Image 1 (cartoon, rainbow, N blue to C red):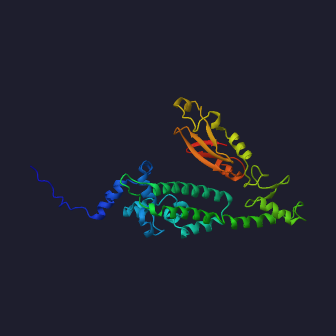
Image 2 (tube, rainbow, N blue to C red):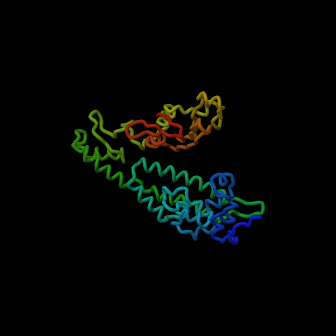
Length: 331
């Protein structure tokens, strides 16, 4: 029988090698990934809140550090990196942290469209985290135990709310001032305002944050609905957009939720987008995706013209194509 080659003695893995290859027992048990967290409220609580170790974490810790260290807390800290920087979860759960103040400073020089984009992301983040914190606060296992972080849930909810106020308190201030100066230079010699500087100031204020031009037949922004300020909100305006974009009212069919479509309906494009009127110019919208067979749900609370234009994908001068989960729709 041929002698096997000597491959050397088998040495046990070091602790670092075991962590790199398999993770820690805690991360293996939790399997922190989007699917398992969606299915397990306990995992969501741990990944989102991170137990009482939260106070020891540095707001500059990163997602990559969490992977290296096998930390479920830090692994959960990646969702809002593009908005708040290195560690948004820790940053948002404590009031006035450096990343939060940095974002607030950036927003001062942003346009209304950019602010609206960030506002939707921050609000969505806060909504989800507050719901989880409320669950964590009230959770009781059969043994009477609490989820990690339950004792701090109220403080963290208040921090989320206060941080939102801080972030958007002065949003667009510097940008609006800059645009106002440029508008005044362009329009100060117009016959309508040559002897009426106060009227020009009022007009600029009405279209705050928007570039105004003398178009010959009218004065205003170079876009659709040029005679309506972006901050104008009204139920009639909302119904106009819903009608124009073929959203059907759920009241038509008496359902609380939009219907499920069969493969035959989808193949024949016998599908619709739906909306639910929540009252006081608030709507829950359901956009159907024929590729996934699912709806994308969005809630617009008292939306103004700017919000509708952003949601529907309007560009500065008119309409563009909006990509809705790989489903191109011309509007």
